[in-house]
Image (cartoon, rainbow, N blue to C red; front, top):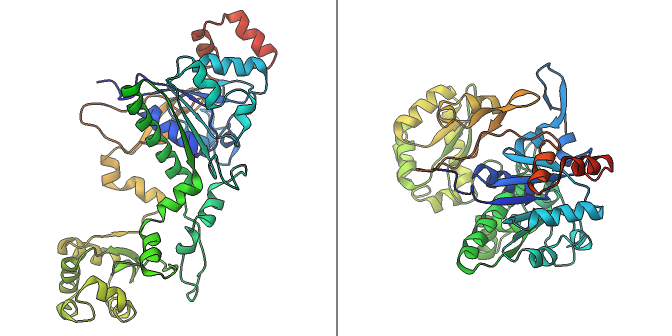
Length: 406
């Protein structure tokens, strides 16, 4: 069967990461995503490198790794939105579009006549999603934001990193732009929800997605730890604040992660370690007791694990049914047999590089495939094709090129 969203046309005015991540999800699901870029420059992330994608001769192209990670499956056209002609082209594209996705500063597209109110008059069925740092309302609505800033403001860095009293203690940001990425997922979800409602009512919708809102929502259990327990959550390194033992353990030749999720698994862990009496100790009998008495439990476990290698413990933990694993580097992730089996890394044909590696969408469907045959586009690669679909002649397209409108 065709991909699930193969009947949709998406006009993607977004740049950098959160918006493009959302539109890449839609493209993977089959939507025709038309990415609007600035003539001569394109999305900011094209220049965010090194590293850059290399061509077939081994020379750097103009496309950085950030861009290659977030723009698979799209058609790129260049349009100068500052010109009346460019604005008219976007309006023409929106006449039969299903979705518009944008992440401009609040008010910018309204001044161009490309806001939801203006475009919905042209196309009442349009689903329009705005992604910003702080949302369309509030005292900081007009301010720019980036993932790092939102990780700090939204509380994530306050609970990420080693304890202040330990070596390396202090706040840390997550090693991937997690707020950007999660905002993209929420935006895609909101768009699909609005499309489902449109199928019932025939009316479009406006969606306001703020990165700060997303990060506050992601506080999840840590927010409830504060709201119910009235204590400010602190950094605990790799140790879980609510479940123990869940953390890293140092072995004779490196570290592993153990994730005990219930009392039965703790009993299995103790039996495997040759210390079944620990599971009967009143201090450790239940998870709540283990959390309260972590300071005494940790040294007992640490003294045991340091005595054998990672391979020894991982094999024993697997046999005991206790979730555990090594701390893989990025290369080791792609060498993992499970990751390889799930085909999470594929290579797609690319007009300049020959092929380009892509980390795949994790969704799998029983009777429908993802659309995974189109690499991230060159800047303006599809401009002539898309404008011809609008009815522009070759002469008109060349005239627009000559006047630097496209």
